[in-house]
Length: 255
Image: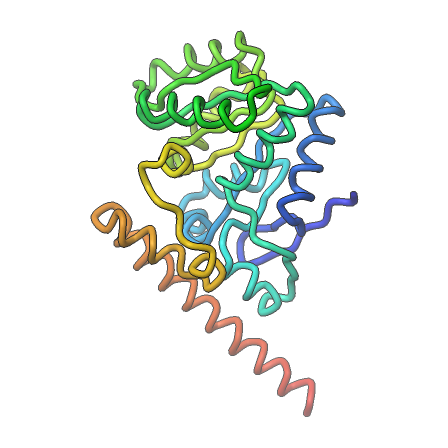
């Protein structure tokens, strides 16, 4: 499948569904290529505008998918089209299913040790043939990052899921990229907590109505309220400006 991208504000997104993303990743691995995949939602998109390094990391990604229904809904406002939302947790499940079928090796890095171990157990229970060759927690000092990366390389990991939050997980992937040796690395934020059963995922109806952020906020208000308040407000402001710009251009075209 030909890979095309749609630009929304400061990022370009692959025009893909979940199934198409998995196919692209598997094709990428079979071809012997390496790279990372970024799942970008509204909060991360706004963070990128304030963090040049994070912006650069996403710009250099092999794949960038829209992990947010507002991005899908409002893409046409920015002259773009996106077929579907692609979330980190859905990618974990979909890629593990394919990895089990095709003999690819999975690595899990992030969260506390009991949590990531529970994630490993649950994934292996779901797909008994799945090869999870590396499991490590995300609590290590900066000077311990290289040792983690070497252990992942020695484990022969093909697909690495890193759940340490933005931008720490991206920093780790970027700084340790040469040492990691993986084909694909994907930052999945708090997905491990959900897979392990520590946090509930929003019901499908809430996901479809673009209110999953509110569901997450209700579960972790002290940690997330400031992020969502600021980033959502910033995005709405930029969206409003674009709508006004589109209206002005439309009026000029009609003149």
